[in-house]
Image (cartoon, rainbow, N blue to C red):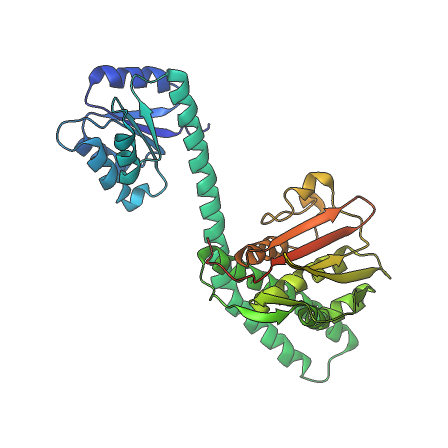
Amino acid sequence: MAISPRILGVDDNPRNLAILTKALRPDFDLVTAASGQEAIEKAMGLRPDLILLDIMMPGIDGYETCRRLRALPELTGTKIIMVSAKAMTSERLEGYAAGADDYVVKPFDQDELMAKVRVYLRLKSVEEVDRLKSDLLKLLSHETGTPLTGIMGALNLLRDTPPLSEEQEELVGVAESSVGRLLALVERVCLITQLKAGALPDIQEPVDLRALASAAVEDTRESAAQAGVTIAIAPGAPVAAVGDPKLLIWVIDALLDNAIRVSPRNGVVSVGFDANDSGTSLSVSDQGPGVEPALLARLFDEFVVADIEHHKKGSGLSLATARRIMEQHHGTLSVDSSIGQGARFRMGLPAGASLRAAA
């Protein structure tokens, strides 16, 4: 059985509480309070998803009640809608300053109130999922990196301990490859977690996108050779930009890795450049199957894969991380693709690009 969202209705007028009760039950689990102090006490135990809070109450008024509720760590994600006869703009602004998410003027329209209640409950649910995802990423990055590094070190020692049979060599190689993929995943998780938290330093250096692309090609040379894919970089003069070279090369690595993974054997991945008064760009084009139209809009979201039932490789984090890096550089990351015609990813940096603080 689904758990009904918990709502705390706060009003010193029994008639108003009766109206709220009639409007919200039985769709929601409604608890009422007749004063600010009672609301604070009940909220700590109830941990409601949403609070409907009157302003004009004896004792602690709604503004002060809202401030105290917002100070409670137990109510970090709780949404608060003030419901009051006070209708002046200055009074609404005071409510927002106290920590309210929205403001409804009495006498309210019941349909409008219900619509706002559902919107804020849905918003709280989305925020909780996003917070859980972030916490999972942090846990994954903190708890797996060291053990995986230890496993890789043990495998390296094992490989250096002769004599290994051909079969044993093959098994060690499979284990090293698997651990390497897991370590790469942990690296991506750490990076996107830092990007979200704004924990990366603000580095602004002159860079040459063509030189970064050449370095990225060296990084992916082995995987390209194994896949039978050729990478061709358009020749020309240096392509000047500004940014963090380590992060920008990370983006290029991710685009090349994605292109190699989807390319057919004997396929060609092309790297091109463009520069004009508005900025510079680097593009990576592949000869793969193209991106399904339904996937295009979500391609840069975290953990997005085309077919989760038959998915075998790739975490769905690389492109999401690359997009965040480009956003920090005031840049863009986009894709053009047609089924059967491959895909062209383009990372663009504005003229005089500089990093901004992570949101």
